[in-house]
Length: 112
Length: 113
Image 1: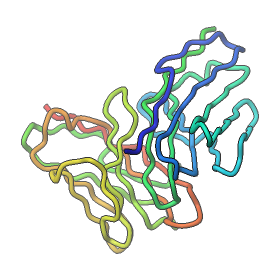
Image 2 (image 1 turned 180 degrees about the horizontal axis):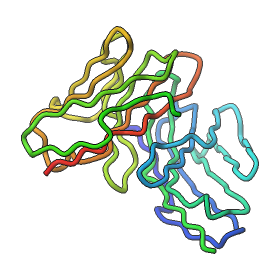
Image 3 (image 1 turned 135 degrees about the vertical axis):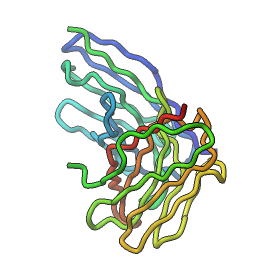
Image 4 (image 1 turned 180 degrees about the vertical axis):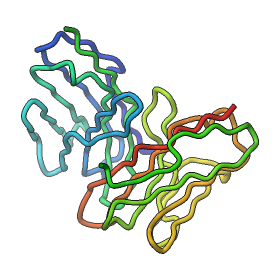
């Protein structure tokens, strides 16, 4: 069935260092991969996304890579800051009308 | 402002009771999806409504039902509440074609005691 696996479940990095979160998906029909940031008690917020016809996308300190052959995609955050501390979810969709399949989340903590 | 409005924000119910949660989508959006997020987990898809009909459904029992009104707003109903139904219930609105942009509401925190 449809599934998105996410690793690691927790991640602690020194402020200024980089953080990497990795996901794999099972449905080869998936063609859109959003990443959400969720702060405690708040709704998920879209931070970056990538479509299947693109291998990499960058937005300031955040970048996402996609390997369709391996069904892997990753989130990279550089020069981490305290406000990056949150839970991050990867997700996959196969059409704009489809449901979002979420990963299990990564709790990112930035050490001062 | 997310544009998606959910009510109430918090709710406490007793096991066996019934609950109704409400969602108003972002202006211009006609599709509403509901997700359940248990503590420490990712959101799980419950169902999606479009044109007042349930279009997709996740792996949830029939105790979970919904409705969409002509103005695109939606309700999620849960009958015979169980302790395990305690979760954050998120509503997300979108348009069905051409744009993958989902907008999430702030959620309703349901506690079943």
